[in-house]
Image (cartoon, rainbow, N blue to C red):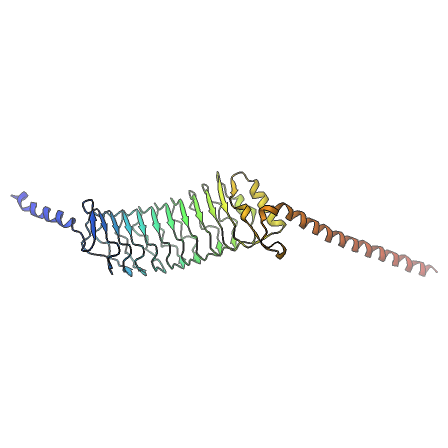
Length: 340
């Protein structure tokens, strides 16, 4: 009798779990839910509890609320790019404890809430590219302990707090290209020993602190193209203890002098460092060398500079010796006059 009473309840629960939101398409027994470009202004109701992929691309959501994803406990992949999202509210994603991939690209986010990553301990792939983020604060990403890939490219990021990545122990790929960073500071990547790809091209970086890369033990690609680098410190790359690292550093306003020649000569002699675009590195200063390829003429830079230094030194020495000779002659002449 008891079984007879519970059977309708179980049937109703099972049926409700297979509902598909109006205007969406559901596949594979409602586990894949496609709500792309349907004009939604909020997360649709009646998303099946067992959904593991939800695609909300191309809608007009404007915000993700704290209750937007309540009940979708099994979700593994959430795609919400190009959906005019301006705000992610506190606790908006905290119920998605099994989420592995989150795509929020091409939205209008200016800031991430401090608890943005709360509950996302299984997340492996996070895309926040093509937003309007200006800074990354300490707590926003700290719970992403399983994250392997983070794409923050094409934002307006100027400031990254030193502890912003401290919880990202499994990070393998970090894309910060096309932002407005000016300094790569020491301590920022202290916990990312397994980082393999670091993309920093098309920023405004003019300085790399000596310890900025010291913790990276498996870095294979470091892209520093199209920044504001004029010079380098060899110690910065000497601290990079990796089996093999490929560097890209063209399109910077390099000051081609003897010191730059020495630094690149040392880098090129280090077995595990490879400057992939060395022949494309061009001089910005001095004006006489503007546009010239450092790769084609770097061996002549120091010779020319040394020759100039020698000429100047020689001229100074001749002048000094001449002055001493003249002084000695005057002294002797004065002595002779006194003796008379």
